[in-house]
Length: 201
Image (cartoon, rainbow, N blue to C red):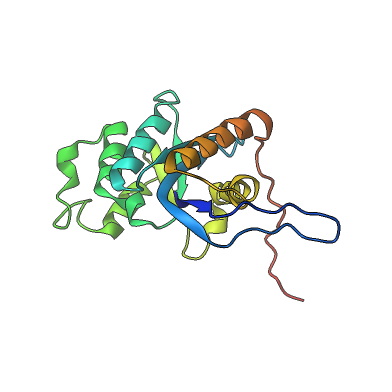
């Protein structure tokens, strides 16, 4: 999940010419933000994403429902997320419980008792490997372990860095078109190149 600003440069960029680097205007008009909620399929390299006006609990739960609906009910899911509060929310717990056939009445009440009592108890429930949908939360300062973060950097380099957007709708359209283009022409699993050996001499 990532918030992206729709920024319009107040003057057009000047392209590279012999002996001169590209020049871009640093002043901009801000047209608001959009939230990109996305998942990366590590087996195929495909990206499933949605662009919304906010990155609220409701938006994330709606995205997860749509994501889980793309596969048979017998399929298991391993969801890698950072530690954003939205990823450990009551709505996410209730969705996982419903998908796993767990009685909602057994979840307790948010802030009071049961699974819903605290963020830690919700995270423990979501991380339960016996569930059809299991969450894996990356350690703090280790977002690089989540492969969607690698894809976000591709999006920034190929689409956002030099772009100028006149509206939130233009930003949303550009992101959605890039996701479709990426899935058709560029999608492949990422290959880890670090061997995991300590960085010592």
